Image (tube, rainbow, N blue to C red):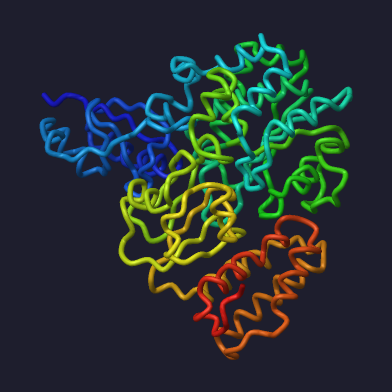
Length: 490
């Protein structure tokens, strides 16, 4: 008699829906199995993957599982993938945490950070965050402790925490995979931040397409709330999830506040900034979910321990979305300071062939040539290239990619997603798209005033969308001048 197959599968969205379909078919065919869930294991390019028979981590399909069911010894002949816990913080226990079981999170030390925070002075907690070197993981890279300090120091009867999980950029998935895999760390981070600033309520702003993230976060909120932990912040404290509309601009921090208040997703004029006049005109701490999820580790293990990861002004780790011309496009976590070539080779299982360059930081990042593949993944080093770490998106450009076409695609993304509120962005992104379209299809020359157009859009646009829109064009013209038929910019 055949014994049941034990299948512990990655249940992040890249794997989850494929595996559920496979398991449904196996059940209908009478194949017996025991299933359990874990988080993302960094092998999205091989999805779906699972630990089979408590043994090996392998890509699975119905055929492979049926053969193992008939002959369990077959598993010994299959090459195993490796889940490396080293140099990980947020994904370290993804192989052990069931994202729909709070007890699995507690078993690996979950909630100890919040417990320690409750017995620590708020200023001492902020000091630990300062020592850690944690910077905003959503793109701006602003020192996290400064935001905490600013909101804490403002006297107000009501304060809010808002966790941003909009993540609407092309090629960026790491925030959603974090929520799919370990939603508890996000909620614990929100609780720590809320305790520090004495928030009355917190909101999580989730992209309208993040169905699994929404489900997992809802479970995490309820399970932690049912343990009676919310009362330690305030008797009426609660965490509410709000869905974003289908627009990229809704992820801009002030536009996000407008949506939560029931208005259109229009960015606000600044100053004042949200730390003083935020949600419902009250002091508001806004952070990306990855930023907040780092707080439990910092509080429990110390800022010094966190700062032992990374280098220079880039401390800790970063979750990245690696896509493009690699064998394993995936979400994974890396320590700051490793070479981009190492990311491609070790995490991406090498490129599929010759590459032309890199798009670092997503649509609002920079396009650089392959000559810089050995640059360190570090805020400052990437900034020197004219790019940015951004949300952690890293696209490997194949050798046959037309760079002008790539830039036009990105520029059209900005033009389509512009809220239209300010002229520089609304008109400027369309103008740049048309210039690039003409370059591809008609004219072989760029307008003489292109630099002035780029500068005007970047300086006068109301929010980060317009301010960053010309960056891919500017960097592409610098590193791929031959494709634009112009001299290299200096």
